View 1 (spheres, rainbow, N blue to C red):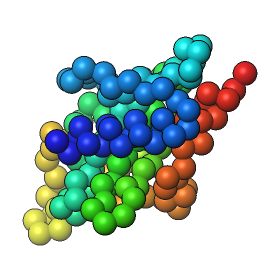
View 2: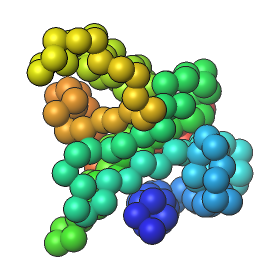
View 3: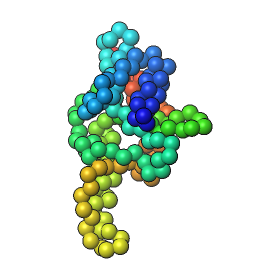
View 4: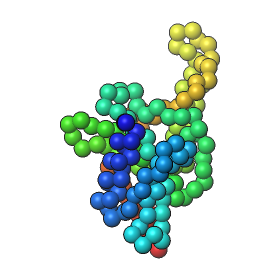
Length: 154
């Protein structure tokens, strides 16, 4: 339910910007939402990753997130659900986000285990947390201009 909620909240935000969002069928491997302008002449695909109310560990991601797609129409939105205030959204170009996740995981795996001093073993998932955010990432909070600018380009 958390992921579905995030998708609907992203759709709500896009609708406010006069962008028509359509949720794709479940288990689509790459994106959750197709969004288009009202005449259908431009579109973007959006993958949504949602952090639930009780999650204090950040966004847990499938390790397939580490594969770039070289698709300028592909975006990723991180959703941080809030119970008592407006949700937070962070919009990224998909491949830029992939680079960030790769960097976080590379730093993690290259640092020996603090207790044993041994090399860490591969884990089957990736993550991104607020501690991994750069100042530029934090400035993306609730900033939809990456997507809205895409639709305003000639």
